[in-house]
Length: 69
Image (tube, rainbow, N blue to C red; front, side, top):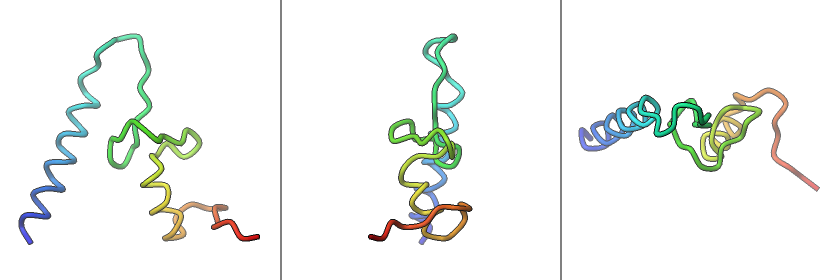
C-alpha cells in the first residue's frame, strides 16, 4: 500500500507548506496542529473537527465524552 503512504506524506507536506507561507503578515491563522486544516477549527483543543472526533473516540482527550440523553 505504497500509494496510501505516499498520499499521506504528500498531504503532510502540503499542510506544512501552507502553514509556512502567510498571505498577510499581521493576520493570525488558526490551523489544526495535526493535519493543518483551517476550517472547522476548535480553539480550546487546537485541532479541527475531524481530528477532534478521532482523538475523542480514542479517549485521548481528557474530559471529553460522547453525549447521551
